[in-house]
Length: 413
Ligand SMILES: Cc1ncc(COP(=O)(O)O)c(C=O)c1O
Image (cartoon, rainbow, N blue to C red; front, side, top):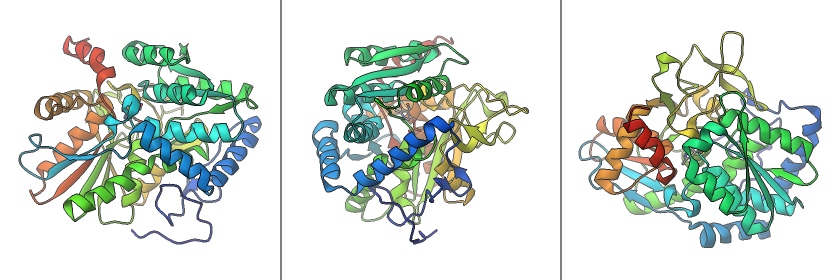
């Protein structure tokens, strides 16, 4: 599909130039939008205006670029696996796990942190599931001298305990959320509530490409550095583009960040959702792959695919990876799927754990459980391709945070 030129194209930081989404209503086709209480509306408009201005300000771009390079550790390399895929296509990993704080989340946290400072905010609030976004936000708050509160479901606090300690060491307050399934969905709700009560002083540093407009756009722009780098690195190393690009999809930020640079190329884009205990069991977070429960609806201010029951009540999700354990998916993914530009598949808990172990033993890389979903799907895809083809995988984060979960899974808990 080629990118349509329109007169209403928004300014771009790292995203695909000329891509006309979100449109003037903050929509990607029918998806996205801004379904929020009236009191929040002016804050979202203020944020949209501030971001549009920042993107066009060379000083902002330079400050961000310098921090991405000297503080976060960009560019991250692409690495061709040596032993992991011995037949089928060659596998390449975009090593976001090597970044400071251990995941792609720092790209967006640095960007939004600088934006918040520019807007005169003194306090950051964030939600976190796997803890990686919470750690990234706490890190940026320390760097910029801002107060930081992170909301985290109590179930996630237990399974990602090392990250809770990291956030506290960095000076952030971690507030447990006990309601509902006590995971990411409830943490997002609490963070929005906090923001609503403290609009003057506080920026809500949302961690994925979801929520009300302008968040899916802002997060995509800050994460699109991943694909922009990877595409140039690939051309330099291989002299051609990969056949397919694969990334895991929680809310969808690392995937949209990796996909964006390839939107107008003849490259397959594959997003991987959490299949949990299997799509038929209902215990998963596969919004696209379960037509019975994954239907269009609104969650956290955004119209997209949401796991819901027959009455439209939001369902509790399950995934071994806290970062993929969320009932809605970012609106741009819903649109890319609808127009056939990206495909979405799922990987179960068991398959993700197996892929994590294989990557560790054959390559010496311990990736995050979230990223292991992408690795598993890429291995499946590569097996059906020729040796002269290449598959690029977004390795979104490292796995130190998951050691406890892996031990528990090994003991059958
Ligand atoms: C390492 C890692 N990868 C992926 C994700 C999923 O988020 P997203 O879909 O926004 O990239 C998370 C979320 O916490 C994460 O920590």
